[in-house]
Image (cartoon, rainbow, N blue to C red; front, top):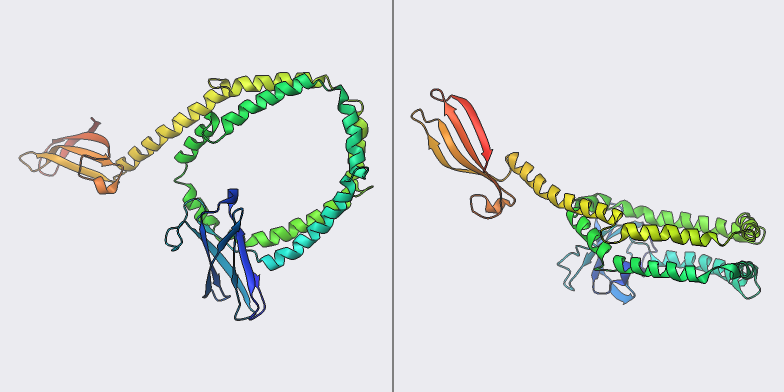
Length: 334
């Protein structure tokens, strides 16, 4: 919800994921009676952040829905970002940022050279002098291999893309049901601020989490760092499973194949349920009973009756036993 002062200009903004800069967000603002009060086109500022201004003509509460367009004329909706629910007013967020800045200053003191948390890290660093860094290098090499697999266009990324493509038809419906639920985000952010304040108390010297950290620091003095070698062995086993042709990789490949097959089978089931069906080449007996015909099912409604987009073809055969009667009926896939 947005609550402003009449005739006082407000700034409205939103940030798109991954810093997207080539979009054209438009915010529609409604009053408490669901009447459209204003339409605000947002302009890109930096790093995927867009904003615009609006001046309320009343002091009542308003709510806003954002539509992300891919063109400046605001005619083509983005299939990636679609529609967004209630927008958070920047003026309200600034107060929260001031609170966060105060908390950050406290942490700055703890992290300064010689500060409380800095001294704890120095003690931990002293304990790490027994680490076998050769093993760490091997772990880094394994991690780099996984980075390649997960990079855009990498082996595992391509598999996930295929799975996402197969399930893409269900996502738009899900997103539609989620529209409007985002109004609660503002309240959630307020709760997060409250939780952050509680954590500040816990992390202060002598606080609950600080005491736990001190106890962990005391325990690290007894750690047997040779266990790092055992961890490396387990990591190597996982590398084998995720390698192309490995056990887990083979499972993912099977899932990918099965979802491709499932799409075709679902389309056939829809056809057999008399969706997009066409019957022709009919033959009748002396009693005008249908004795044979061809039945075809289609994946696209606009192609019904043509030779395109045919999912399957069946031959229908019936044996008549008098006018308007038959003794057997058979449907066989060609």
